Length: 237
Image (cartoon, rainbow, N blue to C red; front, side):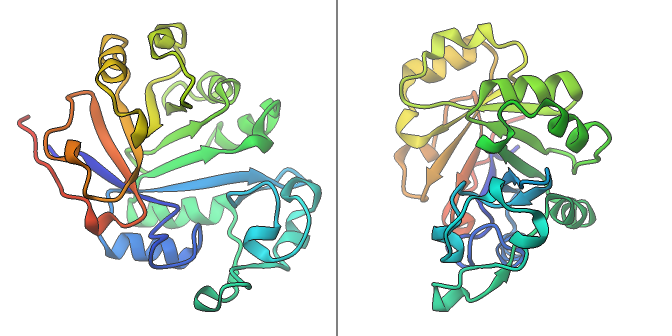
């Protein structure tokens, strides 16, 4: 059994992040799954977009939660970047339909616009079919509680920050796994996760990290901009 390698915002080293080309390139590069970011628009539509502010990705001012889906889709991402000119902004349902057709697992990160949006979470996940191996992640612990209440069968992963107390993991029964930056790949954190029976995935992986060769048993995945650079380590089943 190999540790899975997820493509961060698709193959974001080779195509503009969170676009169809980035996702298709990740599929061609044989990623085990795709990490993507989901925000809510003013009219409650789920879109694939990382930032709350629109400027970095579209070159225009505004916030994703202050304009409608129709207004957002009149903009393009990557316009300021010659190499990645003018990719359309995707809806969550468009990407899920594509991923189901390819049976490509998704790491669905719910962003800050989902905080307090219990009904939106229920509407999005109550009857959705996701590819096998998909999961929902978030930095916002309450959002994960909404998801687990709505769909106990969907894996939830808590994106933790540097100040997080890993010893507190047993206090979150609705969290199934932990996602963390590679800087937090530390023995005490790994042992705390193992004691709490919370498998881990680490992001920010570039492929030259020393721990990739003999990862802790609690590790089940890496998240990388370039999945082709990450060695595939086989484990005994």
